Length: 158
Image (cartoon, rainbow, N blue to C red; front, side):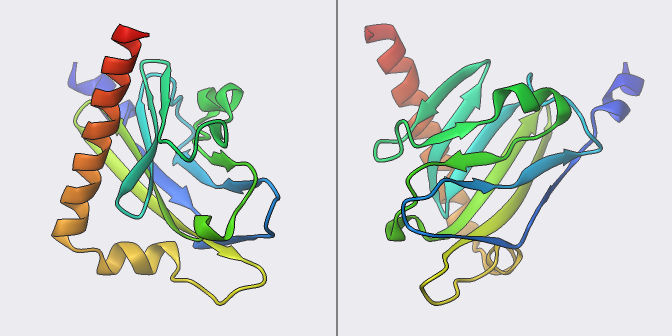
């Protein structure tokens, strides 16, 4: 049994930042390395400490304000591509986004900064993770839990 676990070890890779113009679609890159199918994983995307997108057991939940604007490239999950597509980029979308992939006991994270081509530079993803506090990490986990709970209640009632 331990042997199959070795094959599921993965890392996440991303870029430090991407730039976009207001109104356009932007892809926040994130990939499993080595290329491993992400279909059976839990994928969470955060904007700083707020969970904005949750993919779990093939179900998707989006935080209000992001509904219909964020998506994974589902046909690419098989190849380990867990990049997030963000439609209709707004100035308020600027910031650092964190991709978190959970498979069994393993949890990996990568961060990417999203800047607006017209505006000032924001911190890069790697800088953000280096300076992130324990409190920020706890806020992120709480936010993901809230979004997951909301999704279960919503599905039951819906």
